[in-house]
Amino acid sequence: MLRFLQKTYEAWIDYPQREGALIAGTYVVEHVLGEGSYGITYLCRDVRSGIRVAVKMARPSKGALGERLLAREAEVLGSLRYPGIPHFIEMIRSGKKRYLVSEYVEGLTMEQLIFEQGKVFDESDVLEWTLRLLELVRHVHEKGYAHLDIRIPNVIVRGERLALIDFGLARRMGEEIGPELCRFWQEGLRITADAEKDLYDIGHFMLFMLYSSYDGPCERSGWSGRHNAGKRESGWQDELTLTPGVRRILRKLLQIDPPYGEVRQLTADLRNVLAGNQLE
Image 1 (spheres, one colour):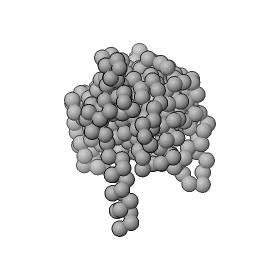
Image 2 (image 1 turned 180 degrees about the vertical axis):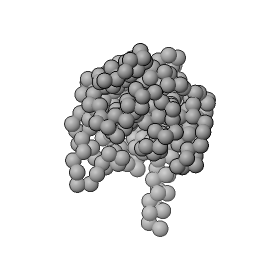
Image 3 (image 1 turned 90 degrees about the vertical axis):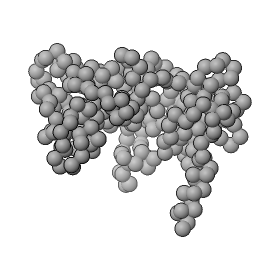
Image 4 (image 1 turned 120 degrees about the horizontal axis):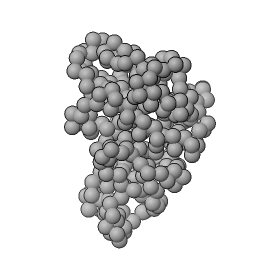
């Protein structure tokens, strides 16, 4: 009963702002862009300029941790300043709530393209789009950060370009990962942010794209391929028809074989496979 009451209270205090609400006398809420474990992001219009922006609120139920994560995200975005990564605008406080204002990136997420639009990607498409994503990830790593949440909902397609969003879980390279990053964190072990974790996520990003063109049954799960991508560590090797080079790249990304240590190595292999060269 106590747990139920706690959840009810959290849902109440985290209830999203309504359309037309005014944040800090400046930003008019149009609608919710997305909700995560620690924040809610709105599409807003700046009443001063008419420009649309993304405004992220730390969930009140997360208390000081939510505030710290929001402040960290502001620091990361302010440090990156790169095309394809949302520009930091400002941090504001309205009442007891704190907000991060950043550039609004228009376009469709890779998740929307695959699951809502029915977009199909062949192997060469996957390699080319992954190279575009790696340009952004390389910049993040060169600035000393790991994104740690590279997933298809966080990659936006804008014409022939990509954008990488949601840096709420980003950490400095070598920084210890806490329980808020539960898929990495292990009690009693010191787990730190590094490039390999982002590259592992890129392996799953590629699998989702590759499964978009797979229509056969998934023998071990009984699900259709496009809804099963990334769910199992090895089933893709039986279900997907891949060239040897792409298979080898995925095995390294998913840490079945000795993994890539940095973006540069992966970029070189992707370009070689696209050019029809054999990997060493």
